[in-house]
Length: 145
Image (cartoon, rainbow, N blue to C red):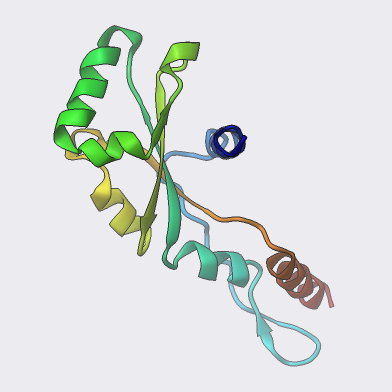
């Protein structure tokens, strides 16, 4: 059950990731002054979380013709990489989804095997908690005022 939930989470994150341009990062919005005089920023909570240590989703693609070769290359270059990866190959989607812990997006990119670093997509992912959602809603309300 746990593995099914983890795989479902990875697939949801991947679907969202495919809607964004490769190696995209959030854009910074200029600070705004709310009615209470404090400077606010449209995505400060999201950006603070995005730029800090955490879990990153790495997405790499390969062709069906090179599938076994690519997986063998991954395994020979870094055997732990395969252990942290989910493969869509058996369902016809030759994409590798890997979850890793890293200090920031640059650190995550450096952990990608060199052969795949140039063409991968790196996204910071996080679990939404009630507290985080409340903080994000509060920031949004403050900006509206």
